[in-house]
Length: 220
Image 1 (tube, one colour):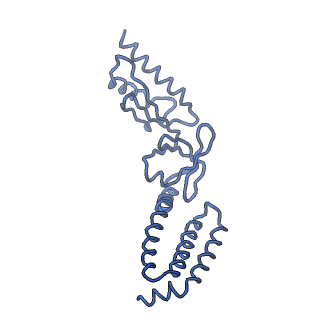
Image 2 (cartoon, one colour):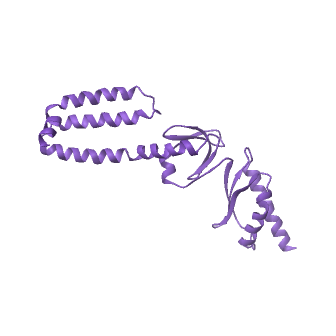
Image 3 (tube, one colour):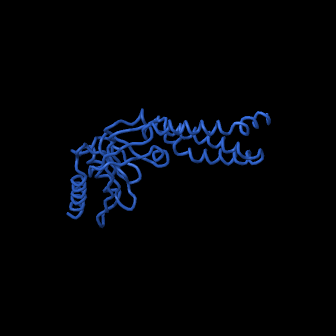
């Protein structure tokens, strides 16, 4: 086994270096979004590393090989997650859906094997790597997602406000009948999927008006 290792790594380092260079040139020919690009880059780095290790004595080769395997595994962790999550997302997510993640919100405008392209309300585009979907909680809806945090009017019970809003939400002219929630977290937290292109500000005004009606009714 040691003789085979020596023959492969010591006697033919130039072959590995040339192979790594050829694969790297092939890697340069692919567009940035192609699946093959990071795979070819990884192979070229592997072949380069094998060729370089062949230039050192046997004892140092083992140390370099261990260090290279650890470094390569760490470097490929995020691209690997992007690929795996991307394979799932390609089936589950559709262009036109709305997604909310880490205080970012937008409509899915395009997908690649590694990332999503979201269009925001302002018309700008964001790139969301699939690894971000793996690391953080996110919400997806066929309609526009909105999250409002509304302060509770003075003297009003949180349970009362939540109950009244929950009674009104299924009949809201803007939201879907069931795709919403009302909770309490230092304020009334309302999550809702609005019919596009519903206006978030108009919806917020309607919530404030609803709370004002409750407050007026309690004072009468």
